[in-house]
Image (cartoon, rainbow, N blue to C red; front, side):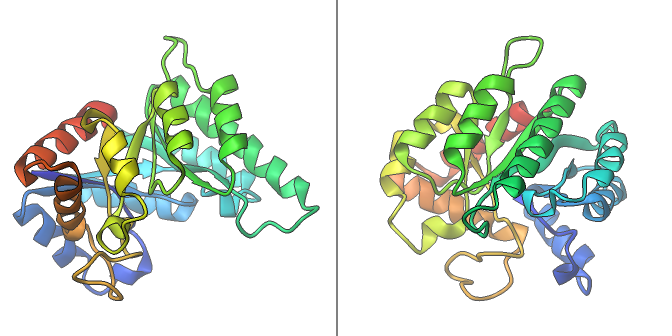
Length: 257
């Protein structure tokens, strides 16, 4: 069994064959968490999760690219209470396209991120965190605001491509690290994968984006998460079955599935 811990099967890329894609995964014993990036997409994830009795779960949130849509957060708060919602996100910080001097956008993203953190703590659900070119600010915010009333921090760094030093910071804060199909076409993260303990690793596709080898350049889909598991097994010198079992257990524990 495998769990794709981060997929966007709710996106329009799957409008023509969404049910077939999902059923193909379930037939292969691959479960998934469909992730919202705004109010509309988050509603869709919840609807999809309720369409299938088992194997499809939802995460609801507002992506930092949409941080100006603060009025949508009340929708996220309502959706978050649903039993099929296992996580809050994706949320976080993304400074990649922010020009020098646009500090107000950074502040806007940070304020919305803190709202997601507080919501996750309030309803005791996991954070799915996006970060691009903003690790220092994100670590600071998680250090200052990340602990819940039980003193624990609970979340995953999705599609992680940061440095080993940043990964150590997140591990020390209690977070999991998730890897995508990027591992199948570059060796840039091999040492990072070797460094992280298996009991702190999740796998994902981020479908429809960044399809792994052997489907590079095509639309990604959740069933391709197996290629990431295979690559992690190769890098760490483990069996595919062992990686599948451990990453599935990690997802089950983190998302309470």
